[in-house]
Length: 254
Ligand code: PEP
Image (tube, rainbow, N blue to C red; front, side, top):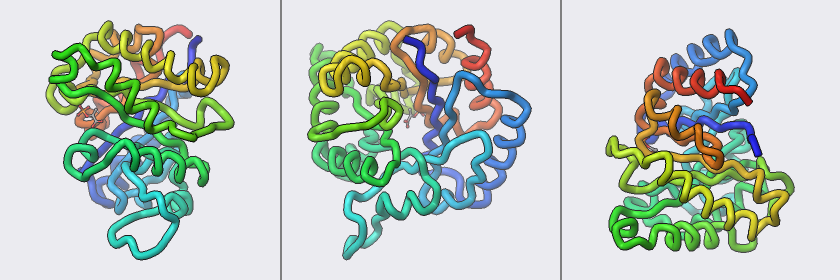
């Protein structure tokens, strides 16, 4: 089934408000010249740059959220606060958060539920480490992470969530997964989604690939049936390259 693609830029700790404003103004201007048919575009900047994004032609995403609405949680930002800013998507469980900020499968689940309650769409990141792949347990790792993230989670519409398969060994390394490696994993994820949500919903949830995607390797990845878009880190900071990825996808026959 052909689903509308998602191309999401994860800016990580890059671009403060001034740079974000300039980038988003230019992105909107250049997108206005195209009529996007195949692609939902998302930009996820640091929290402080969210208000600077003028989203014409694209959606705004956050990179993280806290699961409580308010209270004594110094440094945190709630789903209600993100909603107030017009945030539509939120990345959850990114491997950098798991690695450096003690994100666990349990906190990912709490965040997914909190976001859905406020009608923000989680982009749930899962993916194995290199040693998992070498040991041949990558599918089990992904199945487990996804099952934990979705514990007790229900959705009304398949577009309410997206899953990003991001092998840890591919993030920021230049070592992109081969299209077949990604497709094989996406099939496993698809089966898990169909099992959890039923075939009708599970078959229409978008599964993104992330990890060293660029304007050259996107074509091969997106050729695969189960790859419904990409979560892009480094290359999303470069407007020309980011747009080139979008153009590759838009010119495809549906
Ligand atoms: C990411 O951070 O989600 C990511 C995929 O990064 P990169 O594209 O730089 O590998």
